[in-house]
Length: 390
Image (tube, rainbow, N blue to C red; front, side):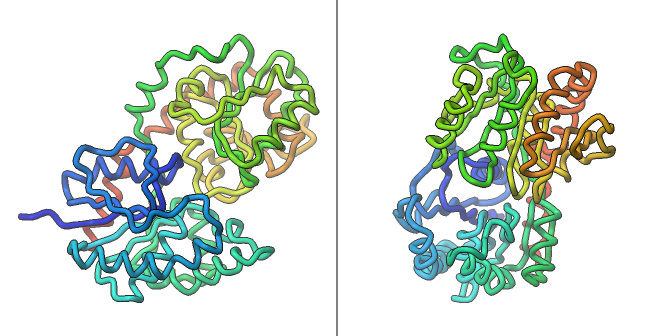
């Protein structure tokens, strides 16, 4: 019996959590389906399975303006309809907002394939009312998302926002992010020759963009009582890099805050660090927190919308010796968004409380196993089969 044909739609396969999830799905679903990868441009930074079917709907520049991105949605939708018709695609899974818009509009333009859209950010904060693209984005969600056959959010907070704030009352199935634990374990053992770990090491991985809270993190490190005995590794690139470099210089932290740039293997640095710190203002469900747990790292995170609270599941409030609210959860520590003092105090506690740090290290890898790619891919497979049988 021939395999059913499914397509996975995403902007590019540049580095990122959604892109990594797509790469894992390509490997894990190919035995059951003929999987087509459909991209908007030819940026591919992850290794694809052998003989992977790939098509590009456009040759667009990934850095083009939001206005251009929006204006091109109808053209990309028409091309998607044509591709799916010519290749007898039975079902599409799209990832991230603009691919979701393109796929939903394609349904309006005659797409016959079943459509599942994966929402991976906290939409009300991602699309802001203080700029035109934000207002348009919110309108597109309310208008187009109801055309999908199902929505697959990766956090409860995102699902609730779509239902209550955008009144998108589709069929929902919560699907968690996934990890390739075997790959992470292998990469953790690779040699590190550009960083010394002779100080207590905090590490952060993420793009230097406004939502990631790097400024708050650097300022919290500057207030750390024992920061002369510690270092902060920042892995990533992005538009705020120069601004952050200037802040580090202003605070005289050049010898303690290390900018490592983009790393194809961040896990070897994470595995040798002592604590993972995360300062985002909002997220969908941050893959990097899962990866930190998989590396056996204690985690301190802002209690942003959405994801960290669901993952770290705080069970008690910190003792009264702290001036600010810090929650010590079952799987990690939460601090309020933007609270520099709370972040700094939490970092100090992690440095000085060996018993707590060891306990978090022991539970980290156990929690990470719940998100292994074999488990989450099976969840995707069941959802796909359910919709193909309708």
